[in-house]
Length: 345
Image (tube, rainbow, N blue to C red; front, top):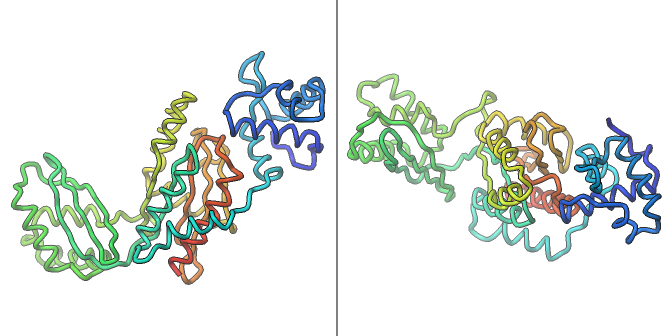
């Protein structure tokens, strides 16, 4: 059941806020006697308010004799109407600026540093969906991983490095990897990935019999896999161990596995990016209320960032258990997205 904020009295809002604050801090149910120590209300009065909030679908009791925890609906109401997101201090802003806009750092490096910085906010993983790169290629190399598998290392002039694993014919000799590197380097260095891919496709049509099988498979796999919309995206996730450790502690590891399975598909990336385009500022997805990740039991706080034309080209945020510190996370994600946008301007 969805309850509008005006339907809650000030007393009910305060009790809900106290319960959510306790949940964010400890993850444990909180009882009326515990709440009464910090409120000017009796335990009996608080129990009555908690019962009303539970009837409204905003709280639940994990055990008969336990205290209460917020439901996803309760967390949503708290985030949308009760939470007062903290303001970033000047020190916080300087720290984010220094991590993302250091001299000589490429946009790709800034995004990677941003995910690591965001993952340090607590038991969360930092996440970035980045735009396609128009940087020109500087180096191409193939590394054998085992029978039928090869790692392709692409280095661009702006310092970005992309690693792609492709399937190759079993028994392919090591000399073929060297030949493929030489073949591609002679033709593609100094070109963008789009230009390189287009050139090889043309050569495949005109001289298919002369093109090495490995090169053909590289092109068919794509230097960067494309989505149905034609946009290229890359997903950067940092700090996953913190999230996994926390979820193991609350015995919800399988739900996080479900989340990461969803994040592995570019279709999900694009849907997430599309969701951030609907309006300005930070977007918050709590638990299973959005079909984006299914029944994952996690929260996602994400904000879009724009290029010099003020077009939304990517998104940055964090994933964590539903008890992440929203008051702290929201302003940090919001400001980091602004910093990344200025870097791309």
